[in-house]
Length: 402
Image 1 (tube, helix red, strand yellow):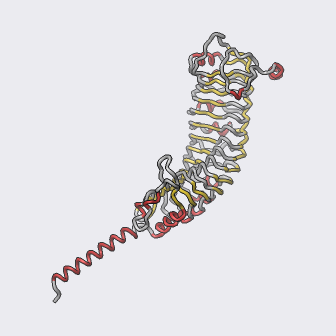
Image 2: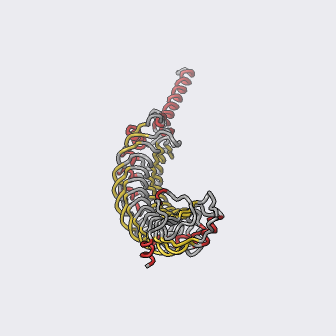
Image 3: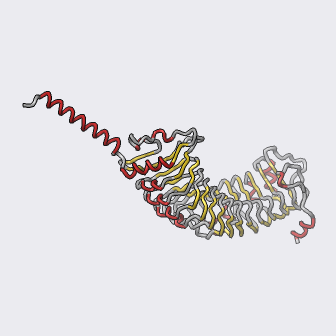
């Protein structure tokens, strides 16, 4: 007959073994094996930059769901935020391992600014649940994989400030859930594809090498922020802009757009309108007082008389165009009461401004009138790039009037 104390000890030992097995299971089996191996591959391909200790917690003898930047739901990784997100913290170096596509439940992937090189893995398209993809300010090169268009639930795509080349894949434009596309400061070329998402609110493609024209229905009316500056885009945009009446920021500067600027856009809820250094031509006629803080239409081919509706603008750049006639009196009134801070009208064909020679322009305001068809009535400092000539040659003025 067995000793009762022996039975008790055996039961205790068995219970202890079960507890240890459960603990080991909790440590090593909480994560799906595929996700576990994917995280190991990601870790091997990346390192901390000097001064960063982001990967210090990535000890694979413990629960990976407790690693810095790893977020799980059950036994699957659902978010991966690589690098210390604090501003100014050193980022990561290395390459993105294709194993990242094995994280089948991944909904969010972000990488802090650093020195990650190489191409975007084609395998990212395997993470069908991906909603948020942000890898800004690294050194990622190569083309944007067309397979990203398979991420039908993607809402935010931020690959800005990298070294990406080639075209923007048309497949990106047909992702139905996109709300933010930020591809600025790369080396992308080719045309801007149509974006069909009816909830797209931000499109930032500035500082690339994009070319071609924009079709009137290529962008959805849901857009609130549009920046296409510093490209080589061409053609008219009046029909397109007329549809985008939700815009609160518009920058089309430093391109080769042409045609008329529709008066309707000056009634949009925009605070900053940048259309400078294009080839827009013809008169500009807002229907009502313009409530935009900054309007820059400089370095175009705009003509006709300056509309008094612009006198309510705080910073107005109409220089280097072909405007004619008198400066409206409402501008003088607003200028003298310091409601206008910047009024640049230089390098046009203006013939006069009704202002008292003894009037003092507030020090907070800047007026430039030189190189027009008149002698500037007031000595106000102009920007250096306005040149030294005070008036336009008479022959040019007569030719323009003729």
